[in-house]
Image (cartoon, rainbow, N blue to C red; front, side, top):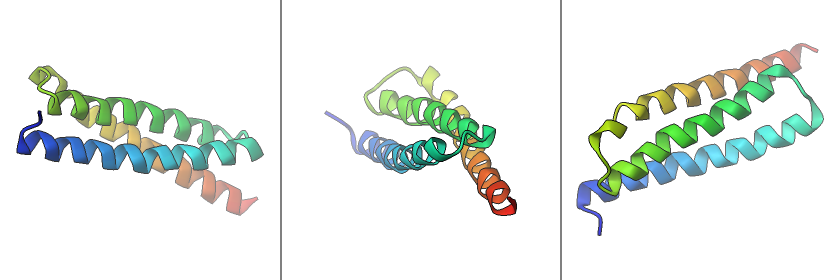
Length: 96
């Protein structure tokens, strides 16, 4: 049973998980057409970001130890790197 706060944390994890799962589908589609390094970096960054960000939030929502709290921002940084790499890939592709 989740507390009210736990349910809010769980919903945040689910939202970010969904958004970045869709981003991974887009990255996979782009990778099948181009093996640009930025696309590969975006894919790995999104995967790591979902694991760290959403994963730590899932654990915290379920009553996991507070040690998982500092992991969440690391996942956020990985997600940001993923979006920047995807943008770099798009800008680089537009120039070619």
